[in-house]
Length: 202
Image (tube, rainbow, N blue to C red; front, side, top):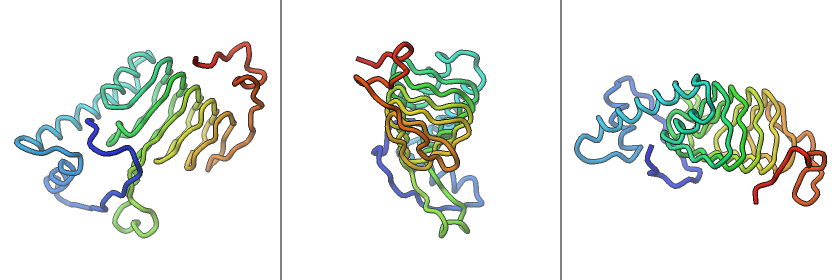
């Protein structure tokens, strides 16, 4: 998707339409498509985005997955690993920033928007917010990252965690919802005990 909105938290309208045409018309406008053939162009882009998302989940090589997600609009740095069955937001992939050296182990979900049904709108707000995964963070198997979260540099998120709030740098976090389990002792910018395996980016 093209960058049409600033990468900050912002409200989304609550809508429930029974008509596909009405929903198509509204979402075309919401996503910044205007002018002649705006609706067909938006529909084609959404179909291609979904297609690349499906393919990226099953291809057997991280480099291909990264390229497909970049085509979708995800901002991905250098030296990143993306494992199998990783799902990055279907509607707003350009709101995801993955910095250098990040590892997504697999079966991860990264969401950038929350849009409850009409009868749930009093319980949960509808909003869009970026997800940022900082340098050298490690996201283990089965982690879900919710909208608006920043994962700090060098942080590790344990398997099965649901991350609803920011994770500080250089910690181990886990649980539902995720909480800090351990802080890593740092020396010369490197976690103690990681020296022989870990090389920080210059």
